[in-house]
Length: 291
Image (cartoon, rainbow, N blue to C red):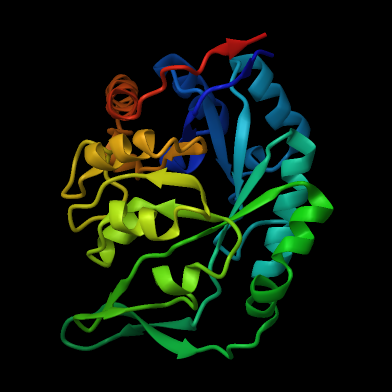
């Protein structure tokens, strides 16, 4: 397979989690993406190394990033955050990806229920978690050792705010630019910044030395909109990355409804539009393909 010496624009399989994994590879190849970020989820397709290597070869798309699962119910995968991260790093080694994305530790668990009153509805209540649970401790003390042991870069991702009774809630430890500075490597997610009304350019400059990966999508009150659609200044952000000589992967990570997933032709057009937006604003001059 051809190796590429340019700044990659990749597509996350999570952008089309309602599709099969092979179909996502096929659409990414047709749209012209440079690589794939695999989000490990309930589908065996997202975590069987031989199958993923075959998809990568069949479609000529390197798997450059693997995202650790953020749901508990993944068959034959650890249910705790630390176990999920370790297993994902092993998967990344097996398929030749150089980076793993992991989330911040939770400050709360949630308990779900159902209100049987005049207006029946489901609800979720936050329950505080202890600060010193194993994953919290590991992120503070063990990341560098895991990176050295596996040869995999671990990009810790900034997380969104959530609304509870009309209030903005932070559900994660270390979830501010000042606190994220403690981690050696970061994945900067633009839509998550939007939920906090933070400017991606300003946050990037604050954390520039640690940002090795970008999840790009827009925000309009809903998360994970297509990069051209929303209130975040993503064109300016991408141009800033180019001027700053950012050389990491940029992954388009949208919600299926932002990519018109209900219609395959419309989805392909939406994927091409998102990629064109990123390429138009993120300069790639001077980077050429090598065989």
